[in-house]
Image (cartoon, rainbow, N blue to C red):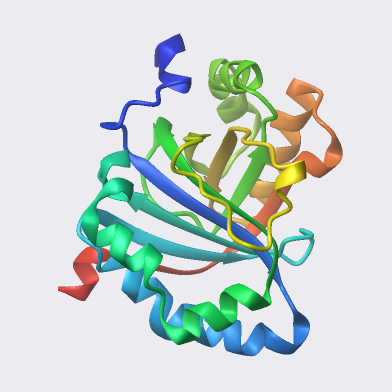
Length: 222
């Protein structure tokens, strides 16, 4: 990878939508039913989407994470995606109102290492592009230090495409890069996230561990 790869914001870069949220306890069951029986399939069926993935954390303040990979950032400006985003179902609208402290980020993807889907991920909040570059440069040392790592990638938010959902406090909004580390176990994800955080001298709360709930590929719907 070159230095410019981390800060690449080309519309031709692969895209990844990140939705990281909490939900009101009384709506949590409905929220999960909505995601698992409507929303995942709806998004994965949009032309240009490659897959949808859902995760849950027992420790993060926002326990639910959803990731959606697209062929490019262009997909998020397509008429089909705009129609889906601007014309949500009634069930979607109800659950958006139940979500709390939600981060919605449309990201350019820098694929650093590996292939495949892990049983868990570490999500590391990198703070700024400089830390993202340092994290990229340290990936070989990370792989030597931690076993069980399958893939590593960096997500860099696109400011124009990362429109906030209603539950995000825009006065505290930070469009920071993320490192996503797919691993074979939750333990490996925790160790990997802690390693990167320590390397970059990030606060303890900068890394979070999530277990994969399920993975839906667009090809599964055909």
